Amino acid sequence: MADRVPAQVFPPGDLIEEEIDARGWTQQDLADILDKPLPTVNQIIKGKRAILPDTAKRLAAAFGNSAQFWMNLEAAWQLSRQDSAETDKVRSRAQIYKLGPVREMEKRGWIKSTTGYGALEIELSRFFGVGTLEHVPAMMGAARASVNGQYAGMTASQWAWCRRACQIAPAVRAQRFQQSKIPDAVAALKELLCDPEEIRHVPTILANVGVRVVVVEHLKGTRIDGAALWPTQNKPVIVVSLRYGRLDHFWFTLMHELAHVYHRDGMQADVNTAELGAAQVVEAAEVRANQQAAAWLVDQELLDVFILRTTPLYSTQRIRNFARRLGVNASIIVGQLKYRGELEWSRFSRLHNVDIRDVARESVLCDGWGRTVPSF
Image 1: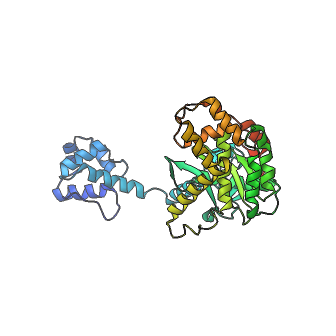
Image 2 (image 1 turned 180 degrees about the vertical axis):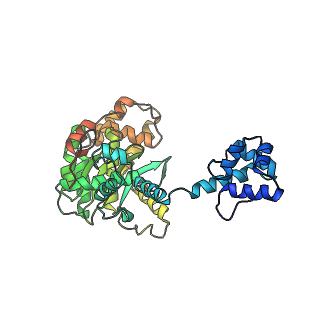
Image 3 (image 1 turned 30 degrees about the vertical axis):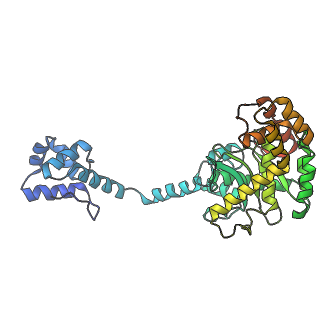
């Protein structure tokens, strides 16, 4: 008998009966051949006992086929007997859990803790603002998140994080969005770059040009630093995670996302990159935002001159003097030098590691670190 997979699903015992009848054997004969008790063979034939690997090998030797054939036959039969309604429920639950890290969202107070599938579906529908989870809309925006230096599509957890930012952002009062006023806002922000305490003025400066700023603690594994979101047209939201609490990282992330808002990235394709593929458009927008953020923080021509005159003899005093001349914190200069590869990451850690988490969390509307902001 050839090794085959049955076109129809039926109990393996039916085929065993056919085979012993074709050979003129009795069940006792087969039991003797297999060296198995007669009750065991009888139960297998009646479908009351499953074929295990050892029995499959013995049947293969007796009938001249493979043990895998008998295991496949048994597996197909067992699967056919399972309740399809239960597998449908499992499939539906899996789809729900793909929308975000449910348990962490419950822990953070974004959704209520539930015990049933139906209640969880209702909570997630409320969180995403939809009537049914079959049509969860993609949000419009651009985010600063990378894997091994390559910009990738947003994950479900990252989008859930962005959605949370959009939920709490309406609590921030802001003027009508004025894209043309962003350069003025940048000029005002640059006046704050020297003293970490000046971060407290950031929300007001950006709210005056219609940009809302919030802080949302990142979800585990998201590796996301910030995002520029458009929950509705002409009401942009900048969210930062403070995943790294350094002063230079906060300012670079903020300016990066503000560059996205200025160019309306995430709302429409840029005219200079419209003919590129979607991934290339994202990459181009990210590169542009990086360049814009660096230039807004530090005059790049002056930085070039400083590097030319100083490398490789960098010192704490030289960096501080240069930072003082530009009116920025030395942490920002060190960050840009490291970004350019001028400094190893471990150098000038005292200048670089200026922690601003406490200042930022007290100055900007913040969700996380044990604090849950009501949704609006």
